Length: 468
Picture: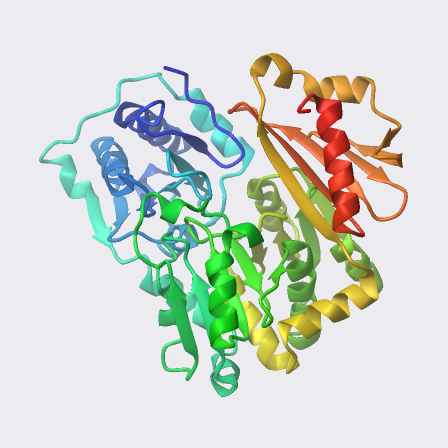
């Protein structure tokens, strides 16, 4: 059995292979010892879980080990979005949180996400400390006495109330939108319906039931996985389609004509809404995998800055904790804003998008078309491919040592090694190449002024790294 190794957002592994009851207990014990070592164990910890196979059982086991170590555990009563768990951490002034979820990964995976006391992704310094305690001691077993340390609580209602306070519900009520929500069989459930109850809005919820196989569709809210949502938008003449991933911390948008809007566009649109309509200020942080549209927009405002960080929302969160960040995001649909928790939140972004539409009086298609007219078109895609360790390990270093001068006939004008290796070309195009530290996977992300060019870049890069 392979040893536990944390990745960009906690630990994920295949159920019954590495993701076992034993390993979950080992992680819970390490977390308990970490909290005790920090002197914060007395604050307690929040534990939540999603709709994946056996997630509630893993959460219960986690809670029992923590409780056996004398730590108060606030265990969610039902499957919930990850940001609901994160909000619970902050709301109850806990020392941290554990969410049982594998987010958007295939159904054979489950995972553990760690949350800091601030209600957001645990920053690298926290997860590194927890790792040090792995395998140090045998996980403790709960007793009749320590079982009282577990308290089941409603972590969803306070979270939904917080989301309502973030936006102008009266304005949304006046608009009386028709909205379609695809929960992708994840723990976002029918919560958008609940958020919009009493507003006069019509919400069409699809795939809101539990299905541990996710209906055969990867629970990642991107265009190719949202065909049912696109159909629902068209059939019901909806103003907005919202897709949330397996644990509802990522957000995918479908416009009123049934087009998927990449986060490369939604992040600038939401930023401009917060600036112009809400009057909020602050800087921007985004991962290296996001298009530079937002950079150009921020430059036009001229009074704030953009910081680029490595992939993984924990890196976005780290800046949100230390700087005045208005919005932070990643190309995969993880977006967080100020005046909330430093966490990506799919349902919060859905509510913010509705407020944006209500305040602008425009359709999402009109808004995205206007964005393109001002900052140019950007067409994006990515390849995730299996790659054996013998090829994958050391690949990025080889590219750093001997970088190509051109890809797909496009001259490389800039090389960035913040995360993996990124090649920027003359004009608007780039490609990012990253390899996973924890699984045999290589990822190629690319964007340019046209989809044909983007795929030319991806295909040539695939040859360079040995995929073709």
